[in-house]
Length: 570
Image 1 (cartoon, rainbow, N blue to C red):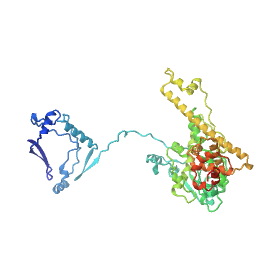
Image 2: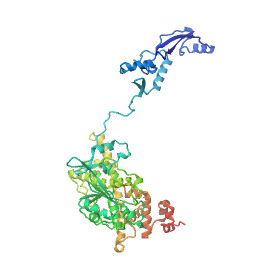
Image 3: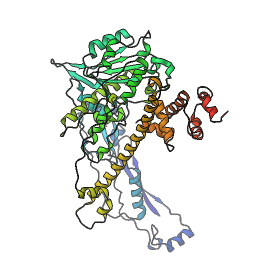
Image 4: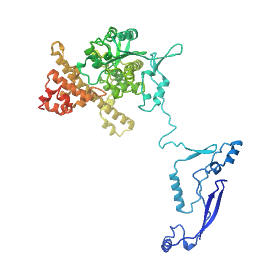
């Protein structure tokens, strides 16, 4: 006979009773034989009789429960209302049992229970019921005490600077959330009386209001941020409304948005705006700004002077103090978003749905914010970069205006000794040397210098390719009466670059010309426009393989039908 214990809980009183019951064991011959053959591994051995040791309960994985709190009668509830409520005392976990478990089955059972109860629960008493809260457990591999580096907002000598509170709030926002992006709305000016002033935006839809805003707010500003927006894939026949849809200029305290596409009459240029743009003493700053000014000249007849490309100053300051990285100083543009994120410490909103939206109709709130931020970002970047340049020792010369076509004034590379020259030219001599003069760190530095030199060589080669294309454009312009071309210089340059470099596809040319890259479709359009307008010769097989195979069927049977026929296609 086997003796066992049964426990019952009285739900009224909350008491726990234990009774002993007897059960007859059921034995089977096969069970007896298996027990004799594996007595060492069995839970009990029938030949040695049945012996019960003192019952050892495994350590409780949960705190002990107060059943009276769970099953409370109306009388107990009434008594609890009249008596003073005592705060629950902290429940201490029972000490683990250090004795060896009676058998392997019990030990395995305890381990299994621990694995299935990985989340600890704590009890919190709240009156007549109990609420369980999940304990906060730090994630594995994540240090909760790790301090984040403090990033200070960039400040300049301007009256308008970014609010530290708004800057820190934006940095705490989740990545790519609406509140995480840089914006002109973060910039404030503090008046003498302690009040703050925000950057004001002037949205103009007529020449009259454009003239008023330019004359009263932007005429005497020495530096202006400048940018343009236009309809994606706009054609020359679309005129100014599609090709120069929106003009943006910015001063420290104001932003002007001149929506040319919405002007009621075909008179788009206010006299004061023309005066500002053609004045070389007024800096017009931006990224890839010369292309915008070329568009302004072609469609509005405004010949901009005082054009300052921010990418030139950005690369000059970034690489001027490193003699090896000075080779990376070139005229290849660096995206506005890249410069903002690095220098202004917040990402710039560049959603493609807004960037390629229709700018010839009334602007949405997203379009207004996007366009105002672009012009104002250029202005703030200029002052951050220029003040850093003035603080350098020795101070590098400032890049010239882009319309002059002068090279960036790169500081001369200081002379190096023969030992340094050998170190930079032959890495094997360092690795094979048995001397302890060079450490592992110096070898890594040399390897890094070699990699950077290779990058510089690639950038130099890219500049040579672009320069060769521009030379061909200049030669063709010089051969024409009055220097007039039948197609834009950008399209002609693109064709010459593609034609002269058989290893470059239109997608490669798009990456070569701009960062971020142009659309491949834009490059294809440039190539075909140049061929059609200038009657240029071209490699038919290559044009069919790399260009016409990607062309929209509507354009293939329409605008570029003659070129398709020249390639032998029906």
